[in-house]
Amino acid sequence: MSASGVTAAALAARLSAAGLCPRVEEHARFTTVEAEVPDTLSADSWREVLDAVANADRFGLLATNLNGRTLWAVVRKTVPTTSDVGGPGYQR
Image (cartoon, rainbow, N blue to C red; front, side, top):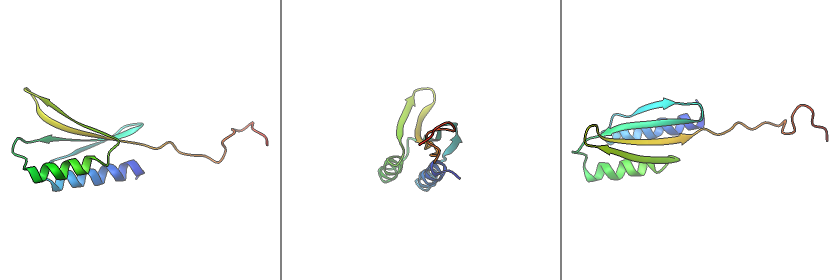
């Protein structure tokens, strides 16, 4: 599992422990974690949720009259490094 996958899984576990039901999705350049936030979430749970998403690269809350509140977080994947920095035709 990639580093972003590990971070996203840990984030999802913390959201689950706070009483939410997170969904994790892998994308080409990032991993997303989303969860519906009930109106009844306690202040202590909100603190835990905010502390958890602080570890993400980006996060937010989408609130609408039709769909309720959805918490989202994005963890960027790192670009792999290579020792062949100059490319196949590079000479020193």
